[in-house]
Image (cartoon, rainbow, N blue to C red):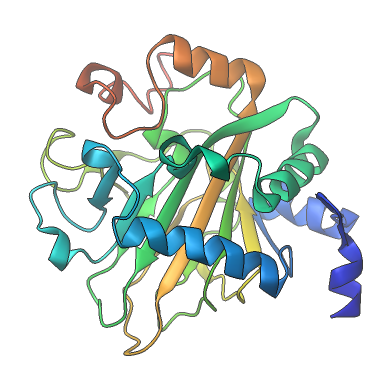
Length: 276
């Protein structure tokens, strides 16, 4: 514990050369104790205010990633809240965001900026809370510079039982994106895409503790199973850092990572033949 605490240096978190190597070679890395218990508690309060609908979120930015947009809120299995810092601006610049920024710089360089944030929650007893296999870049416009550090902070201890993230190591090195198809009809009915997988894919569960996080690349294949726990939530706070020029190009074409973005824009994502 003392070693982990020494890596938290104010707004920074120090990443080892070994961890940088894992991020490059495997496409993801697990970093321990990036936030203290007190810091996680503060974020947890903000997280649950969104879940309880105390913070207004527009339209489809509050949805269920396990079903289509017609699913009633009381039946949600994967509560998905896009852009929480847009709807609660005082979240901007929080300690998690600052430490993630320092990690992104160490992993990918000094030109990385925050692209978007997201909250994901699987309540207990939700075995259908499966987040289908996907590569993040399939959800986004393809730019000349796709470098991404996507952070997944555990608000709860994350285990296979309650639906932890699983990654396919090395999948980020494939020459092209997997095919991704809409899971529930077209993008007007559901935001969820699902990738093709093969028997050669060897996923590894990322079982991490509260305050830990994983960081993965934009082409790393990942997904998660349902929550079979009768007592434990599985809550995650996501932030993603991308090159400043990439984020500027996204915004120029009207892509903000909101589920309320125009269908014309959302239907053009993940196309490697149409680099912007």
